[in-house]
Image (cartoon, rainbow over all chains, first blue to last red; front, side, top):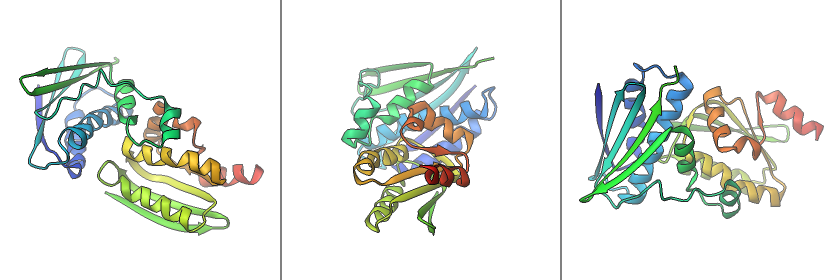
Length: 137
Length: 114
């Protein structure tokens, strides 16, 4: 089954995204903690795109598709902004984040720790970030 | 939605977080902590019982103060986080950098012992 949601590129849309994810995830066999974390990871990727790739332009849109396949849930996040390859981003050391008082970078650490697989591809101006979470049981 | 409340209890400045912190409202949290620092707070206790959700934007706000607080002798602790929110702090290892307590009396007790 597929669930689709379009996100307008403004940070105020993030709470709508969470509502969509909570509703969509309700039907899947993930623990409450896992649902919470998966919601967070998807939001982190979208927030990054909204702020850094689209400069919070509400006219831009990000497309999210959630689908389940066998033993995993796939979140496909597609946009047409400047490509941000999450896989190439070097995760900062936590101490470095603290000393340099940088507020970015933490989100990507969360995504990498929460999700089981991350894929990224960019084709003809369309970027797709695919996050995979496997069902445990 | 995020609501913040400030109160004072003995030497503690208590900052209560109610709702969700994300990239749309983390500046409000930042401003509230900044105001506490400017008002001379030395012991900041964050009441997280009503914190339903926090993304990296909010976690980054806490992180950004740690170094300054060390230098300025300001103590900050958090108590009462719901388990799934506490898990997020743990994923990042923030539980090693910020004192986190189960409830208010544990937080106050730990500081009185020190």
